[in-house]
Length: 110
Image (cartoon, rainbow, N blue to C red; front, side, top):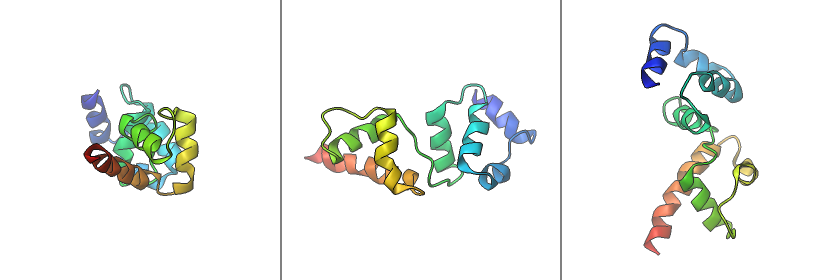
């Protein structure tokens, strides 16, 4: 799958400039159309490789654990709840995710 993704960038089917220029939802949909790329991989790639700071890796185990701890939830939140809890951080949900991930280090030390 990674080779297919790399080929799409090399042959111009996909381009960094285009993915950065369009709305986040459109860029994510374009990448999800690539065989082997799911929502988490796309969101993480958008955040890390393209600097799209609102990309949200819904379903990420670390994010689920951090949200559960931060909001004192009885269980890890499902996808819908994650979206609701992260909405106040828009348009920086990806950056907020990073800080939630970092909070896990403190949680593990407790």
